[in-house]
Image (cartoon, rainbow, N blue to C red; front, side):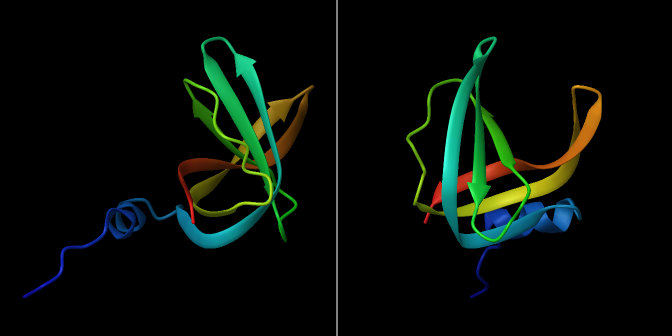
Amino acid sequence: MRMAKSNISKLLEKHENLTHSEMMEVVSHVQRQEDEWMINTIMVKGHDVPFKFRRKKSYKNLTSARVNLTYYPTNELIAGMEFEVMKVVRIKVA
């Protein structure tokens, strides 16, 4: 009997820029309101780039938690300067 592919495997095959990482340690987590969305920014141990995701409601504090992330690199324009950020598609506490 053949096992069905996981959702993550399907996402990674469909979108070549996606990366999936497991057991990443969150060193900082900040949330802020932007219109009707909560913008979450996390910093992960060993990475200098922020990981960002949006939710309709507040998210539990992830500082010191281990998480599995599916993300892709993108650029954000802040105060006229371009910064690299990782756009999180899927986050799950490990």
